[in-house]
Length: 284
Ligand SMILES: [Zn+2]
Image 1 (cartoon, helix red, strand yellow):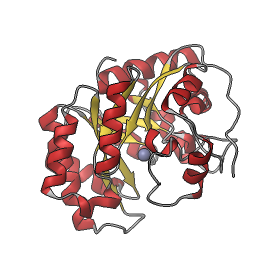
Image 2 (cartoon, rainbow, N blue to C red; image 1 turned 135 degrees about the horizontal axis):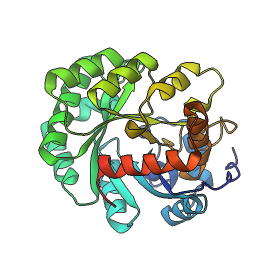
Image 3 (cartoon, rainbow, N blue to C red; image 1 turned 90 degrees about the vertical axis):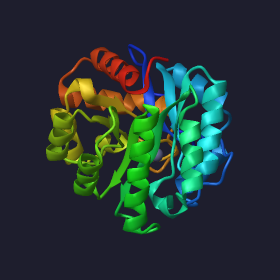
Image 4 (cartoon, rainbow, N blue to C red; image 1 turned 180 degrees about the vertical axis):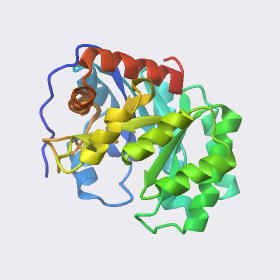
């Protein structure tokens, strides 16, 4: 079993984690993928309170916990209601798009209206996995876009190997006011397209990976006022902790990398990211 990484040096300001999966971290549910990193995290993890405490100790004071199916969306919505520093996203993940029936989507919309639920996501397109057909994924993505518009919530997008189609569907369906590309995975070209459209780009651990120069090039051109930072915990731990479970307290490693890439002061980038988060998800 992988041990949890040690805490990094605290940030010189407060920041938040725009995307993580508390439910998987606290082992309330089995990870549907049976992914070994997620399973190790479940074994090592404690409670929502301990995760928040560890995060606060390094300056990560708030987070958004994101659903991927109906049970996880319900759990995350309820958890956000119980914790002042936690907001939730609710949706059916593109890998589960076949499960996005009208009844299920009606409950997602009901959950999205709860006061502590501030995002519809993660939704989008995943051409890396074929667990759901592209037809089902497109229908589910479009339905989630409409839910985000009706509820006034941020649309949180999972885009894996599907950049062109994600951009095209957003343009065709009409994007909601706030769009967030979660775990931004494009190059500088996609970052420019997002910037032009006013979409937020949420950078995660992979921006720190040695072989991911294209992500650092994207971060370099992304306007600071459209940047967010996330863990996607328990997945995607930043360097040097690849292969170990991720958690919100590791945000400082990714934020420091982004500040270096942008030639920005760490405190200034933390302040920008916090302001962006309040604009995207509403005041905490
Ligand atoms: Zn995620």
